[in-house]
Amino acid sequence: MRDREVDEFLEAMPVSIAVELLGGQRGLEQVSDPHVRARALRRAIELKAGTDGGSLQSAARAWRGFGAYVALKELPDGGLPASPILVAAYLEWEAANSSGSAGGSSVANSRRVGLLWLSEKLGFPLGVASPVVLATANPAQIREWRREDPQGRQRKTAGSLPVAYYCHFEFLAKAKTPSPVREFVRSMITFSHVMSVRAKDTLRTVPCKDATDHANVISGWSYFSKDGDAMQTFAPAEGFLGPFTWWKEHHKLVSKWGKVLVGYKIRYGGGNSILHAEDDEPMVAADGKTPCVMPKVQMLASLKGVCAMPPLSLSPEQYLELELSSHSNHGSPSDMLEFMGSICPFADAPFTRDDSREIGHWLRRETEQQGRGTAEAVPQRRGAKPAQSAGNANQSTEMVGVYSSGANRCGRREKQIAVRTRWVRAVRAAIEADGDWTKLERSREDWKILVSPSGDADHTLEGIPEGVVPVDID
Image 1: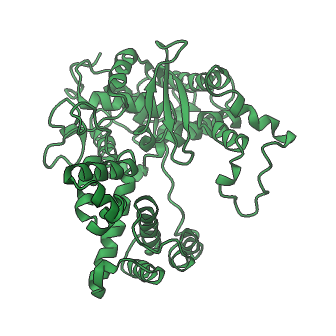
Image 2 (image 1 turned 30 degrees about the vertical axis):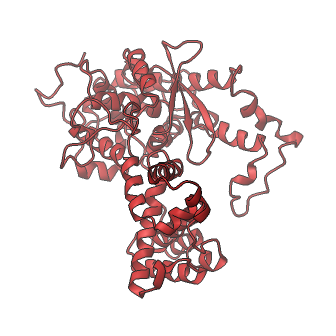
Image 3 (image 1 turned 180 degrees about the vertical axis):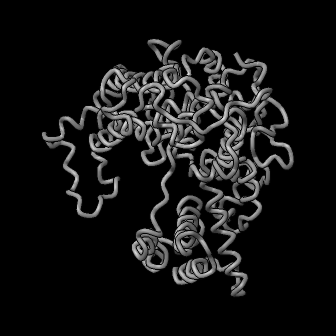
């Protein structure tokens, strides 16, 4: 949980830095009450920690590594203030002693980013913002490492979700009895699967009520990791197995929470998975009322645990082979539309490249960035033409993303609902024509039913063993 990350960081934070953050000697003279100072310091750390403490956790790892290096070299005062050459020497040491997938270069760069965060956000006296440090650890090193062996060192990509994966979640969501697992899968379906939102970005999603058709339309405000701005997302309240009859009930719950994924206390030995939650009530923040957001590590463990449940029953080896990640929920719908294209016999019309981009939010994100004059925020690819000015008349079509989004505008909402409705209904028709989703293969090979007429797709997956279907499923 984020509270734990904050507690651990406060314990490791040097007293001298804490004093300076609170205003130095003058601040100590003006406010000497230790309780007031402790509360103020904690609030400051919480403010910068990130939604689930991920940013703070990364920075804490870098700080622990730096501390270990300073202790090894027996430097006085904990190595503070740290000169650029000291930081560079530490990063070089990290790279030499790491065995990461990118030969240690990714670890060193990650530690540099963590120390930079500490310097910029909390005022740690670390000389990180220096070309000496950047030359020692930077993203370009990872690219160079890959170029040495383009085939063997390809960038890992998140695997797309099998059809059976979506169906499995929707199957479990129909459970009548409330439970952490049921609420988790319902939130993943509504605010990640059908929304094309990264699982980790779902942690920051805020539910809202669709002003026009709340009973049949899901809506929320999502914050994309690579975008930063809030974006309202829309999707029909239906999936591959039919309408979400439980949607209104679930919306009331997440509205009460104020978030869509909440964290639970896990029993000892439960491996962070909500399958081993101690009780049905989420953990609450220090105020004793506000539910805590689910930590990313708990979300990832829970996704894996849910996939191991029947009827999908993915083994650890099968889950690993699929190469799924939190990004899979975002990219899978676009990939699926590209796959179906013009050859899907179950769609009312061919799926186009614009459909793929619309369902992945790429049209909106690109046009809003350029329309607001922030195209320079997106790194220019090597060989690409410079971004045009937002005021260029040739960009009139790119302004569509701006003029069709936001309050009192309907264009993007209608396009999002339309393309997602076509997508889920085409897949549903393919599943119905095939007969039984539980007999699909435990891999992306099950996508072949999307382009094969009824009866043409072969299956290797056995049916659900008797006795494993939950008794409280409709």
